[in-house]
Image (cartoon, rainbow, N blue to C red; front, top):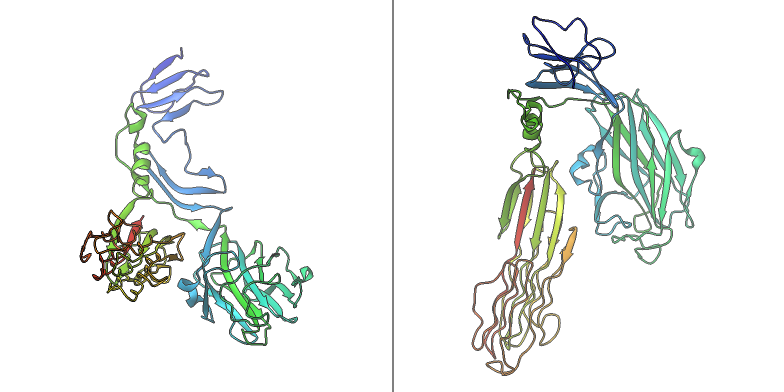
Length: 492
C-alpha cells in the first residue's frame, strides 16, 4: 500500500521516498517519488516536463500541452519520406507538367492494367517533366517505367534529373536491339537501379515490324529508380531522351508510372483541442475525447451518393472528397415477337482517387427499340464516367443469332467488369403453348428486365435500369430495352 502525503503550498515536495505519492492541494498536482527528484504526473499532459517531444524520425517543437489542450505545430520529420508526385497508371490529370502532351490509352498495358501513358512522337526527341513549388526537403528519389517495343536497332535511351543547382545529371543510359534488350550497368549514376520486365502484351499496337502483333518476347519495359540523392531546390526536372528515328509503326517508346519521393520534409500538424474537465472515467479524459472527435470526422465516411439516368456532369461537392466509387450499367437491348427478348446492359465498378478531380462528364446509354417478329433489334447505348470506365449496352433480340435472345453487354476499365443477363429465345405459339411465361428481358446488375406476357404485346414499363426489353407473344411487337444508369458515391 503506497504512502500518500499531503502538501500544502505551491511547488514540489522537498523529498519523497521511491514509490511514495504526494498530493499538492493548492495546485492539484500529484507527485511520485523516484530514485531522483519527485516527478509530477498530474497537472501537465502525462509526465512531460519540457516543451520538446522526441519522435521516431523527427521532433515536435512549439508545443502547448495542458490537461485541456494539446497543440502541436511545425512537425519536423527529419527522416520522413513522402510520395509527393505520382502519376500512377493515368498521366492525364498531370499532363500540363510535361513539354510533350501526347497520351495513349491501352486497356492492357504490359500486365499493368488499363493505362494512359506518354507516347513517342515520331522522331528522336526528349520528354521533360518540370515540377515547381516543392516543399522544403533534403533528398529526392525519382522513378519511371520506360516501355520499348518492336524493331529497335541500337537506338538509345537516356534519363537525366536535376541536382540542387538545376544542372542535369545523367542517371541511366542503355540501348535496345532486335534481340534481347541490353542495359549498360556501367552507365548508371551512383544509386540508380534498373529492372527489366520482358515478354509483355500491349493491347494498342500501331507498330508493324512484327506483323502488327501485340506480344513478343522482346516487348516490355525497364523500371528505373534513381535512389535517394541530395536535393533541396524547390524545382525538379526529369528529361527522358529516345534516339528512335522511325515511325511508331516500326518502333515505339512510352513512359508510365512516374513518381517522385521527397525526404526530410516539414509538415504542419492539426491542432487537437478541448475544454472538457478531467474526470475519473478514462473514456472522458479530454485528450481521448479530442482524438475521438477528430478521427470520427474522416474515417471513410460516405458523404454523398448521386444517381444519373440521363447525360450529365458530375461535380465534386468539396475538397474533402478523397475517393469516388463509380458504377455504370449500359442500356438494355430491345425485344421482338415470339417472346424473343433483349439482353441487359453490362456492368462496371471502379474506385477513383478524387484528389485531382473537379468535374467529370457522364453518359447514360438508352435502351434500343423493340420491333416485329422478323428482323433484329439494335444494341443498347453505352454508359460511361468520363474516360475512367464504361459499360456498353445489351444486344437486341436476334442480333447475335437468329431466333435467339440478345447477349448481355459488358463493362470496361473498372476493377470489376461483368456481362448483363441474356434475353430469352424463341417460343412457339401465340400464347406460348409450351406452358409458363416466356419472353422476359435480360436482368441487369440492378434487377430484372421487362416481364413477359401470356399473350399480346409485352408493354410493361416497369423494369430495373439497363434491363432487356421483353418479347411480344406471337406476331406482336417486342418492347424497347430500358435506359441504363450511372451511380457515384463520394467518400471523405
